[in-house]
Image (cartoon, rainbow over all chains, first blue to last red; front, side, top):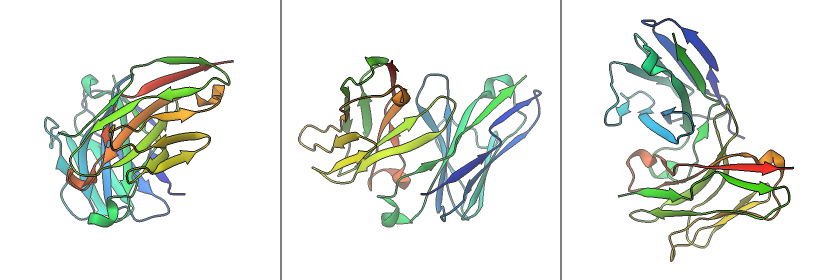
Length: 120
Length: 114
């Protein structure tokens, strides 16, 4: 089946550091990737949607300059949390979907295992 | 607007009990419906899906039927196991939703006791 690899799975760093999280589709071409944030015991909050080769579309209230998203190829997207602070500590999850436009409409999203980010 | 409503958890059952997790939705057009499962400390895994009315999705003993008349997609399993303990998310996606992104319910935690 479709596999999405997310790395790292856990990162602890000091306040003010920038952290990069990678999301790779291993056996399919991901025309669209999504980045989510999940707080403890809560649902997933969509942060942004990225299509390969295009600028990401951010959800309302998500700071573009804080959460930099790059989707340079059909198998890789990255999320960089710039100048991270303790309030950015969370569980970040990516997902990937193949197909484009109407072809993508019935394609499920395949999720990575998430990255637990802890900012000290 | 588009939204998904799930029953609040946690749902606590004994092993081999029957499971139902209710899910209803509001959407424009004809969305696709999904159930995802999240085990502790992990991302989400697609459990099953249905893309049109009266479709039944099934996987690993779980089933859900797309009911357009009641706008529901309830998850059922005849006999749960301890290993089914997880959080279950109902979600929808569709042509009238930007980028066909998923709209998630709040999740329902299932705890199965031996």
